[in-house]
Image 1 (cartoon, rainbow, N blue to C red):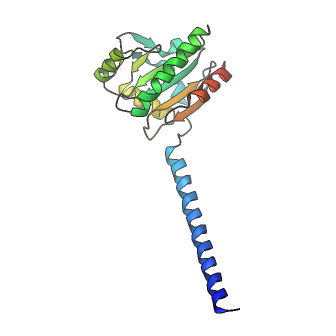
Image 2 (spheres, helix red, strand yellow):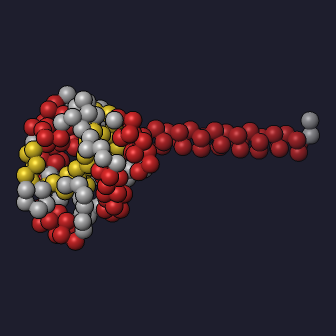
Image 3 (cartoon, rainbow, N blue to C red):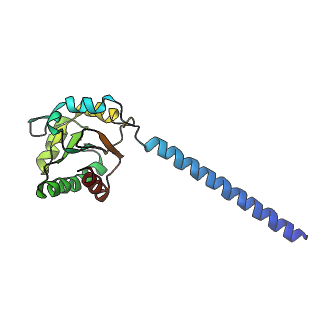
Length: 187
């Protein structure tokens, strides 16, 4: 074997080693990101605590969450300072209208604001929504944590089935087509 061939083989082995190392780093990074950004399974009292709440709406009315039982409920935790939250709200609004127009009163979207009451009220006054915007405050933070959002990431969405069971949690902006399909499957 010539010196040039030997040198080429060493270079090839070095490149394969570097590629293997890069792949290992990428896989490790993906695994760590998945662990950090994934929600934990909801705790047992999450649904009981949710249905026990009576929260104020942005327009000052009260909504007993117990009154939503028997419907598919899409609970969206959001804040006015969260751009992805605000970006997805028109789509959630359209989805609520779509289900209302299809004469199925078995779907209800609620937005629980993790923000100051004044910010939520001002935001609601500037926009028109077909679903209630609730003043969550610390109760909203605790509900999101019980549903598995221990990092407090927003937006955070929970789908509760008609039977009152947890169906899905979504960390980050929803893909509205996938959400529509999940809600339809729950009906």
